[in-house]
Amino acid sequence: MLIETLGAARDMGRLNAILGVLIRHGFGDSVRRLGMTDALDRAGHALRWDHAADLARLEPPVQLRLALEELGPTFVKLGQILAGRADLFGPDYIAEFEKLHSSVPPVPIDQLRPQLREDLGGEPEEVFAWFDPEPLAAASIAQVHRARLKDGAEVVVKIRRPGIIDTIEADLRLLGRIAAVAEAEMPNLRPYRPRQLVRELARSLRRELDLANECRNAERIAANLQTLPFIVVPRVHWAHTTERVNVQDFVGGIPGHELARLDAEGLDRKVLAQHGSRAVLKMIIEDGLFHADPHPGNVFYLAGNRIAFIDFGMVGRLSERRREELLQLLLGLVERHPQTVADVLLDWAGDDHSVNLSQLESEIEAFVDQYHGVPLAQLSLGDMLVDVTNILREHHLGLPSDMALLIKAFITLEGMGRGLDPDFHMTAEALPMLRQVIRARYTPKVVANRAWQTLRRTLAVAEQLPHDVSRLLRNARRGRVHVGIELHHLRRVGNQIDHAANRLAMALIIAALIVGSSIVMTVQGGPTLFGLPAFGFLGFASAFVGGLWLIRSIWRSSRGRDLTDD
Image (tube, rainbow, N blue to C red; front, top):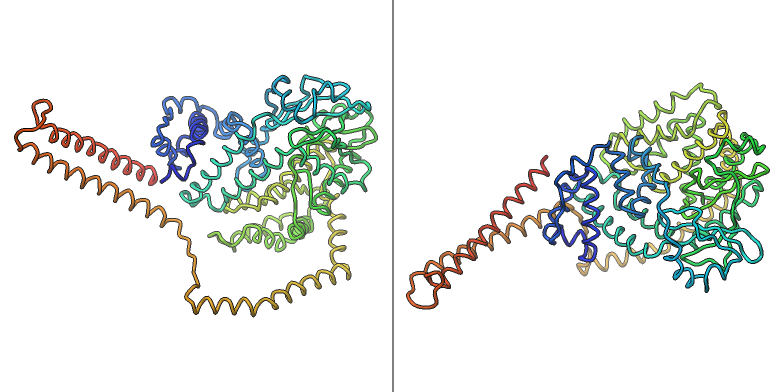
């Protein structure tokens, strides 16, 4: 039954609240198409549909952003992830999702004290030489307070909101089930992998909920960037850091969105843009571990043209294979090799979609070919990546989640570089490093090592092959070879047959009640009700109620088919 698919009874209250918000913001049609209104109706929950259309007067992208903000931290984080999915949404939606970095009302310090006493081992005023009860900033998952250690170090204390895990876990369970229903019932959504998107959201949120994990990320990135003395990552104070609270050095520079202060402080904008691009390219191309949420609020400019990155709760990771593919893509864009770009994107999109590959390849080649003859300094790598994702979206193809996150970070940081220096071009900065990395990957030593690793894997497979073939033949002789075929529509057909059988059984019971009650009515004697034989009267009443239920069931089933057809 659909109610079993959508979740356990413990989540029905939250589901009711979520659907109420979606309906109020004008997404009632999507709720109906997923069949969730029937599920809540059977569970005894009622949704208010009246005046829903009157409340949805804004544009759909704005309504969706407002709905996500109202639904809380899980959905705010979902919107932030979707802000990087230009392959799924158009510019209007992306622009609204990018506004979801706004702050939320802080939790009063009195509500945080029990948790702080448990995590810090005492009152914050006792653990620190000074602790500011007024928050410096507040976000959907945690809030930050300034403090001073007893050794005089200025720090920030990041505190997770109490009780947030239960709400997020309930939301993730519901989103997982809704994504499964959407993928099964809406074939046009399958290329966008909604279940994979929810799994990505769950991984990101669970990592971000662990504030100690954020500190581990910060230390790894700081170690990777040691060769760049102009990059600062706040030091972690592990003595006061746990899963629910972390303490890091306070960064008192110029926030990334206050560019007007740079000139007054004597900082060089061109140098800052170059330093930022070198750090970003090293994180992405060389290290495979990068800051995945580099909006201006997480970047500070310091004296000496240094740059500080903060808040490493959300980081991106690239495997060796992904970095190799990324290098090929970026080189193909910068050096105008359309076939290289087409090959990489087709590999990312996969071959499980009904798409005209020749047409897609032709469009990508035409897109890259238009940049022939354009000076390198006039190319915008971020704009080129946006155009490529637009082409994929038009063909209903999605990018791998890790690459979508990287492209979002790349575009954001290039925009920040342009904000510092209008003449900044990420392409000119990236090309020397790309060529250097490519050359390093094809040195004799690296090639020999890669060949040796490939040979070892091949020999291991060859060694195991006789055993695998023997086991396969043995299972075949015993009739234990199973072929798994997954047909999504058969499940729905089975449910329809089950409902039809239930209605048929009810019809037979109603008919039996009518016939039996008619016979009882002719028998004299026995108890009466309203002057009629009691058992006969009760039988007819039961048949009447059953008939009403059967008519309602048939009508609701017909209405559901009409909505699906529409």
